[in-house]
Length: 128
Image (cartoon, helix red, strand yellow):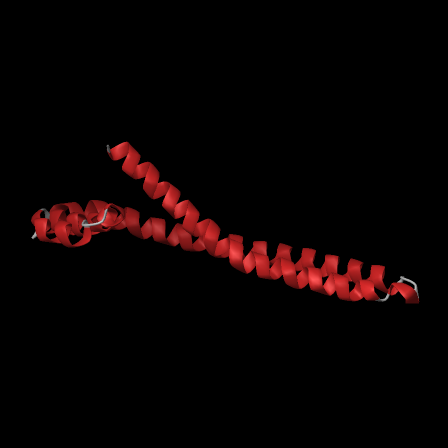
């Protein structure tokens, strides 16, 4: 059974890590006494991870919201104090904000994909 799972999921070098939970499950089925030594740390890790991630996300989003509000107010004050003949700067600032947001939408998935490819390449290099 283990060889079948390895052949199915391990055909590509990048998916071989997906077989490890199945290997662990097979070991637990063969040795049920090990489950009590593994279940408690896993539950503690899940609880700590949920608490940390939700807490950091909450405070991080508050900080980002405060900074965004401050920058928006500063830009609005800057634009309202401009003379009439510099009214086109308002459109330039709005266009710059749109361009930055579009670039963020494009670059974040590219960074994640390139990081994943880099890690897979490093893993293949160390396996050789």
